[in-house]
Amino acid sequence: MTFKDMIKGAFIDQFQMSEIDLKMILTAMFFSFLLAFYLFVIYRYFVRKSLYNINMNIALVGMTVITTAIMLTIQSNLILSLGMVGALSIVRYRTAVKDPMDLFFLFWSIACGIMCGAKQYLLAIIVTCVLTIAIYILAGFPSLKAPYILVINGKLENLEELAEEILEEYCRYYKISSRNISKNSERLVVELRTKNAKTLVREISRIGDDINVSLVTYEGDVVG
Image (cartoon, rainbow, N blue to C red; front, side):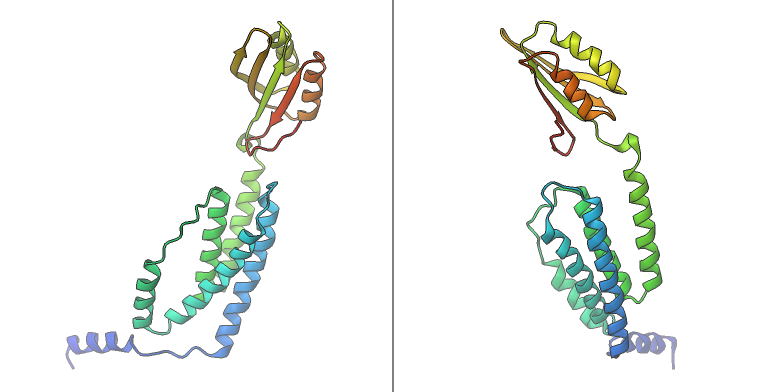
């Protein structure tokens, strides 16, 4: 037998179906669903939105399990795997993922499905633990938290001076981003960082009776 025949024989062997026993399927699906359920819980904890999308969270579970099933299917036969790649390449998704965290969790669920389908259960668990610790630590950094946007509307002539006195007392950092002055009113937009958001809003609102104050986070949640 020549070297060419050996290569040809080894290549042909890849086209033969390899059996997947029931134990392998149940084990892969068990770890896949276990990690998917963990993603379901951790997604709800970290994605603190006023409009929480339960469908997105359920999709993460389905994505993990389906990816595991696809991996179990295509690893049994080379021809089937090539055909699966061609079939999946023509699929186009029109739904835009607006939140980067949603995209992050989607890739996380797909990665868990691939690792479970490839029977790399320990790797899947380690990666999940590392990512959980990483996002928990990074989310707690004060420098990574988005600043507040303070909007002040009033009719006082010295509104800016009075507001700055309060801002210097309660803010670690502030910057007046916009000034809008009309004949009868003045509007200030201030970017700031503070740990006393509610107290700051109350103190500024006490400047005058015609003062309107709104403190908005980067995500668009109204604080006061």
